[in-house]
Length: 278
Length: 280
Image (cartoon, rainbow over all chains, first blue to last red; front, side, top):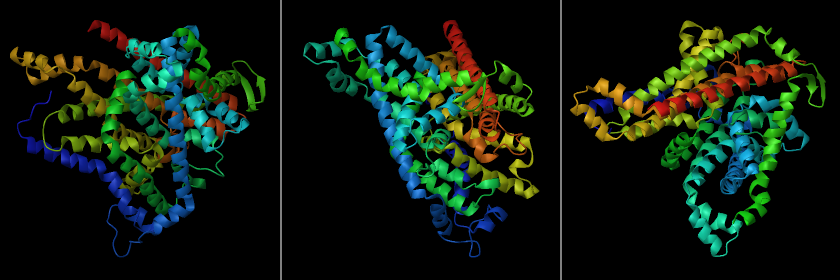
């Protein structure tokens, strides 16, 4: 499938143009983030000039209005904590389900698969009530909720993976005197690493960007995530402080782009592996 | 082994099961029950049978959002898959910079829906500004705005899956087709596409369910304006819950219907994919 076309430089040129056009929306936000409020809507496409340039003003106001630094911290705490509990507990459950294969394991598996197809709207109202009732309205409370609502995909990918691990290796560990706990953490876990990376990537992409679940369950007076902070700038009656919005949008994209630059290969591999299994 | 494994079951499945109860099973069961009641708060509910389900079909905004969402999901599924396939087909060829182009096309996927929505709000309103209009001027503006946004976001994701599918096509088969005298077009439709069928199944499944479930981008880009005409199903349900006191039960009934639609698509896709696989 990897043939060289007749005029490779022509292909490079054409795709370079498409790629530049593809990045244009991001470029537009960046240049507008340095313009005064009134100029953003009146002349959105021009570069900032002496009249329209305001320096870091939009960024400073955006950070102040949204308490952006704290949102970043809470987004990080929620994403990393939730991803960690999801990876740890669903991999344990998936391995146990596959190796045990009794009626309890099977019904658990079926429920997880069912969880995979249920849209969030189905549990939206009752889940936010229950989270409130149980006091799970903190970032660490969300770890529990995300583990509960987001476990389906992880269990699905992990069980698919465990089925491909030869049982003999674990048997050897058992003969050497390992119990299930040590077998899992010392023998199975290292083998599962590629699946763990896949699941980690898919979950992090979802958790970091999720808006509705934290919006409905978190105690918003004390904690906001980045998507919630961005949405808060819209304010009542649809009015937006568009200058601050531009600054915050750029700030919201920076961590994502940095993360992407550092783990591009794993991300793309993770998406492919997730798609084949899913 | 099994015996000691059974003894440790509480450790391996306990935490997930407990969280699963809180995060999924209890809210789900409660949600189904509440769809048959009239309620303001979860604890005060009065059984009304199928009333909510009947009321729902008299709600014009809901009926509009139902077909609006279906149209949106169909249009985006076709556009995204065709474009993603073309891009993938061209990007498996060897020329300078193809890896950079792949990275560029994938990148929007990592930016969340809310942020994407506001990025495109700026761009689309900027363009429409030349005609003194905005994205919320007409429901069709919002529709095509969201279609463009969705394409921009998802083409790269589907492209990655298609590239993986295309790379797994054995070169011997393509060479054999060439030896047999098939032209490029014939090879594409008779050899390549049937062989990447699994990737097509996965991608159409993802795009159609994403289309039905879309919420964040809708909220940021149009928030349903003008007069709730650009409201997709997910946003319609949200607004029924949190914008219309006394209609919580109706909202829950809509959510049940929504679940049936999404799960129905998933089951149909699964069945269809399997029937294709046995035929091949």
